[in-house]
Length: 302
Ligand code: GLU
Image (cartoon, rainbow, N blue to C red; front, side):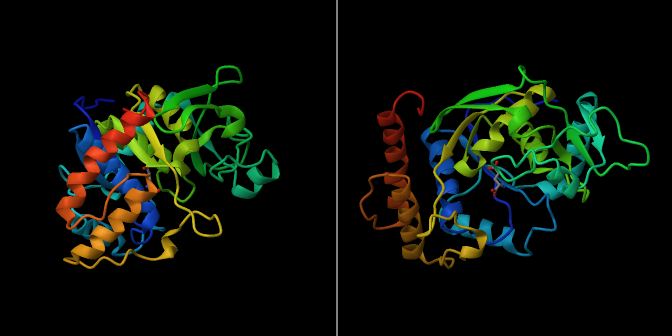
């Protein structure tokens, strides 16, 4: 697969399953600050590959809100729903590593291998050596290496060393889903590579998906970006905020609401900021504050 190689390229990749909320703003802000602190570019990609989960108007709302917050993308917005052919091509390129799977959810759950940290059922490998008589293909899976060769490790700029064994921690994973949609893992890896993304900054809920993505990058022969996973915002009950939490109340042109939302997200990221008088003042203070935070935490983050 051909990729672009440039200086720092970061991105924010929201799924339009609801409005941008305080939790997703933290991921957006961290990726934006990291790109600006590195004098890099910052891309926005709408991850609307799962059209069933996409909410009408949510993507436009997210884009308008980013604009109102002063976070402007460098370059065209990319929409995954318009890139099916690229995912198809990538899957064809690695056909030797994939196989059709005829199992349904219940059959996989019945194998009692449990679920991966992200909630996906661990696949027992039933169809690895061919579909049984009379079974039709439901999904397309990527074969992970055999035990002993399936360890993927990387250094996250925030979380440090992360090590996963793909066999027990995920098993052969889905690239094309039974409902016909390309899986997030394939789309995200293909797009990060095609867009020349050098640095992925996102929420720690995706930390456990990263080894699968790194493995897929290796199979596709594309570079592995650097990763920085920021802590996930939780509510008073310790639950991750969901899209149902509600939109940030920032109307276009309401600068004080924009500053307040950004300041809250920045404080969550432990940026020591005074109350800024304007949006412009917020950004003027926040970008160097992020660089200082990285420097104070050591070389891994810089
Ligand atoms: N689309 C994913 C989400 O909104 C983020 C994917 C990523 O940053 O890799 O949770």
